[in-house]
Image: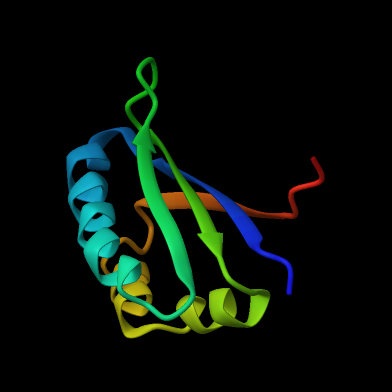
Amino acid sequence: MTKLTIVADVHAKKDKIDFVKAELLKLVPVTREEKGCINYDLYQDDENPAHFTFYENWESSDLFEAHMKSPSLAAFMEATDGAVEFTISKMTQIS
């Protein structure tokens, strides 16, 4: 089974940075307890505080997909609707 790495970039609207940051921070402890989560680390860009990045590792793609359907992520999506844009990159380590 191959570990899955996720790089999720989240861009908050300029007037919603603090709100989005607070909502993102709510996800961290809950997600770290989810089955298959190896690490779930949140970063904020030093030069562009509206840009956040999650660096995540999951035991499998199926367990990541379960995370994507979690109640905590659904609550985040509802709370931040219209306040964020994001991209998710699924990656496999090759060296």
